[in-house]
Length: 408
Image (cartoon, rainbow, N blue to C red):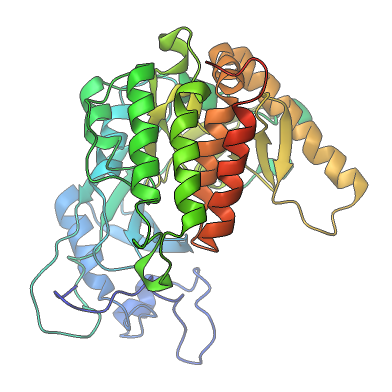
């Protein structure tokens, strides 16, 4: 992407010459060879093929399937020896990739977290240019090439009720990432709005969590008249939001529990988009499912344990409330009573199994009830009506400080 070039979100899904959507299964290599690549508008796919073949010393004989994710294409590659690879290639030019590569390299050493095996990657490069067109080269797009794991994704509905849980989430929560990894990435991967720096070193302690919340609130709600949220929205901090900020800051030491810091404030690696759509699942000879890989770590982050998000996305989202009770979101408005009951059964089973394998997760969720409410409220704000949104959040904090049993 050229310096000063207008950003664009991502390529549209390509179309065929007759203006129909590319199916993802239309003999892509043959289309490319005949000069009819559906991706020609966006980039030169021969450069992608050439780079993978040269860097891995392989020959690609077929590209039987192309998928589209929110931010990436998934090119399924058949090699001349009959084996398969998957190339995940970004749909937009110049995108962050270093965290994800480090996460894959880190997790390949962790036995119970089956992150996809990364064979080759290239970070995007930004070149100075006066061009105002989307570059046809691929240097500005991140590229990851993986060994293709056995199985398919999005197979939740085919599994029996006894298998509606994934133990991998427990394994990920139980894993202790190295301190230097946490120090490098905690602030970098924090959601907007985020502070430029933290006043204390990253550490698995309550004191650090107090500092993290304080810095996050200060970065989100600055001073009266300052921009709040995203610049293009044109919102500024008003008196109600500013008063709410003071309430939230006062609430922090009341909100964060004392207790076993190794349970509550241990730093954990969260996937950020954990769900059946980002897993490969195979079945054994007895029909029992097994997860063979977990991929797409681009929204991952590092958080204290009591802020970790156990959500699992399936046909709906399986969530827990502040008391670690199961629930669901993203349920269709027209879902039947039977379907809603089924979704709740999934969630109940998932969280029962999760807490069986990671009992400290349940402890952290319960102890961090108020902290989690504030953290997720800050995360979920999308810039709308800051006076009302933060006014209500500040009023909640004031109410909580009068509740019996709230930390003094």
